[in-house]
Image 1: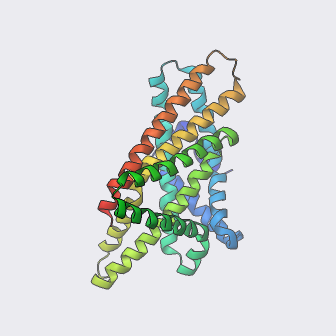
Image 2: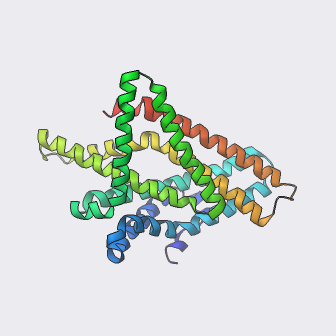
Image 3: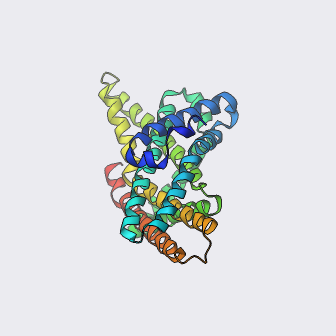
Length: 290
């Protein structure tokens, strides 16, 4: 209850970047408690605890955004209010990512392999598919094959976010917290591998190397990932608004069609963000990070 009372949607809209530090705190507490109480299942328990801490904020946000659909008549005004929620939720997510990533970097390797066990297995599975995809890309020269594959996978995640939010209310935060933990593990792995390469050539005489490699690790996954995460939050917001409107007002209300229109617009915007993210991941990220 103490952590839940730290922030509400109204305060978060006024100070969105404060949510980044709360994300750091939430994810760190989740890691510590998972190691303390459920060490053998820490990789999943830390995600679960992060979700538990975040659900009150997510639920209150969905309630607030659904009320905006009933108070406001202009879609542009409604979208402006939605954008404030998307901003602070994205900051919260980035806090999760950096929080998990820092624990990945500073925990001993033996503990890391246990705390991020399921995440690392997921990354290995994704990497094996990427290798196959890259081979197909080199042989056929069809960049669109990679683009469509990435976009299709991200669309599945978006649909999950919408469904989770619709059927479980704030449940979409689970998918986002899980993605944060996977991205953090990928960042940590990239950081350690890159640092080992630097060490072999330059040694560890310059502290700036650490900051440079960490920045590269963050950019490697967030330069396109930020578009995907925003899309998932928008999708979760759309599904949650629809669910809340059905519960509070039903389908017979005169303004329910406004809610449906708003949900449709949000979904289309989310798809647009995914298209941009898939394009960057296919054509830009591989060029910048070999």
